Length: 340
Image (cartoon, rainbow, N blue to C red; front, top):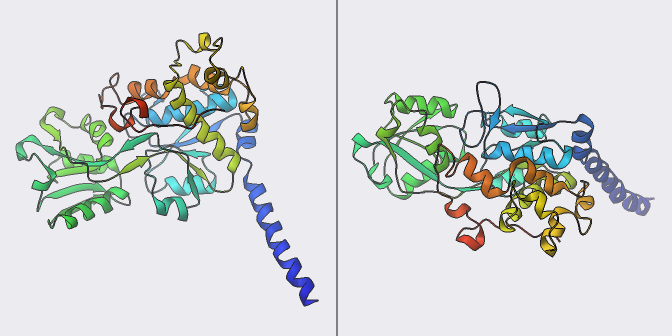
């Protein structure tokens, strides 16, 4: 009897684990049945996730969610954007309130392993920096010894700030706020000497200041902040879909497939392009998507370069340089596995 129990117990455990995994591996079906993608986004950060006065959302992360909706539902408009604070974002994903989190979130080991998340990839390589008033006459973060710095609490930004000053044997007065908006308003009101967040965020937040031209972003980047979307553990199919939507946007830029020429590229005889647009192979079927899933993405939002330029780059108010976010063959580190 003991031997039999020993044999049955592991099988029972595996059965429970399989049942749990099967129960959670329903996101793609749920989204299709619902006819709507629930996307957790920022709601307050220009360039990444921000609704206008009419409730129309724009941003790098916003376009990623639109791309998923285009691939899965054939319509980039079928997205419900759920504004989430830094504090609430992970709980919203874990609880199923949103299907995906696309909210300028840094991929770290602890978040990847202890929060029940899978990061899809990096849609923006960032790093933390500082903004100060020009009247402070500071040209380097290393000149901020003893300064007061506004920062949002409960973020990797707060930890990085402490680490940077400690590593450089400098004192700092950290002034924390629950939201980025509160921190920026406090800095603009003169309550702090500097404000710190991801460098991309500094350019976005500077637009909100009373006199944006009176402030400069210091040159130091004090951390690695690979920002990317995340999904829940336990649903490999949805994980695959989200990953390959991002990879499709990057690959499209590399293949010179754009919003304007994608219909012409469907007629291409180039093997890489044929696989991408779905005229060769069954790569869409393998993802549980239509053959032209990647074409739908590019028609809806464009390739990665187009999305970058429109939201944060040369064609946006932020005017951020591509930098590390250039393609790997253009001097950057953006790289995607091939469709094949």
